Length: 555
Image (cartoon, rainbow, N blue to C red; front, top):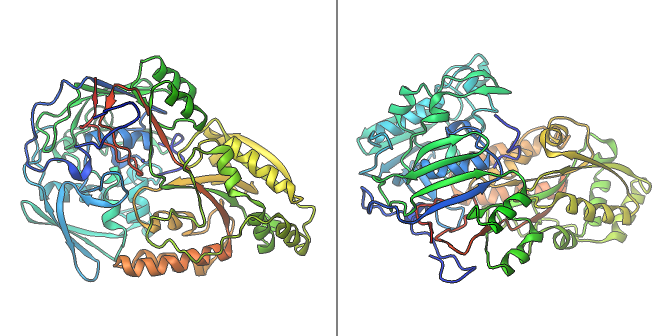
């Protein structure tokens, strides 16, 4: 999930034990036409850390927009409950050609959009052709981030290099069968369709409310009435209202094809401060919230609140900018790696259950390698390497963010303190540079070369290795400050491999290559936690935040 979340236009029997949601992605009832009238499950008030950016998920890349979108919209592909693995959703099944260029989807019958429009193959092709046909402002990477990054081209563009891309066509084979054809293989195609950005949206509503009529510019975009007042999907909840800066309200869709929501209504309330979210839960004004601070977990549990952990599908890393001459020396980078005690960083700044990272992806992702160089904690070896590099008196800037908590970085200030003391213990003088997350931090570490070391990370969008190492190292960037054509070429080639087996072999080699080159230090995969009142039941966490609330009730 995109790192610049905030700055741009994942039945209770006893307290603490939540059972699986009957209405999660691939477990939604498939009989068609819903399973009842719903309601009588109370109002579920969930505190979000920020407002949605827009209610049209095709123009979104942030977690809070996607949290709302997952209640209203669905894609062809979902995820297996409690995992990051792709599973059938609006498509009941699919087949691909041996060359990895064409995918034929058999669609679920009896599904309607919230405006009554039938979901069929024509609606699927309408959505794919909509994305491919974007022009002008809708092509801006900050607006159509995921389509830009995965499909990499449009039918027409003022920039000749952006004409074409991955998508070739979508054909209606029959009412319930559609075939999508690509211009080249993309191994992550199916998994990527679980992203809310690629949700199926009502062709009728998109046209009626002029969804792609955006005004302004990329820094101050004004979305259409569709994206602010009339989002229309197939999901278990219907949009009611959006009070900017305050809340989004949803109600059950009575004609939902699966398990109709048991809740009477849903309110996603915006509370930006983590302490304020905790106090709202303690005061009974909300029923749950995300991104629980590690230091709050024990006290909340002791007070009878439920804590649910997501399986970590993220990564915190120590970034090293090789545009700084001293950091371009591999001996210095290796010294820094040996200076870091990852276990100590975890114990001082992350929740229990967080795991040490040995490479730039979690262990459950295809291509994770057991044979990478791990650079064990060894301060004596770090001092030897610094001396060998002639850098025994090295001074470096260490940039870290303030005023933020992310699933991969729950307490950046505490993580910085731990790493600073470890670096100074081997003779490195650390110049701390603390910057507020919004708007300064990301502009400094991603948008400029003015940094030495920095903390950053990533929460995976879907289970595909390109979504980790390809995001980090697929091309030259100001964040890392290096040019490695061999690595760039290997990543580009691996992205187009048609089978998971071929992908796994290629990415294992890439992970070994990355850790020998050592552009940064993978630190940990922290466990993200949610907190709920005892009265909440039926909420199942997902490592990619594919959490749909039609099985939730509030007693």
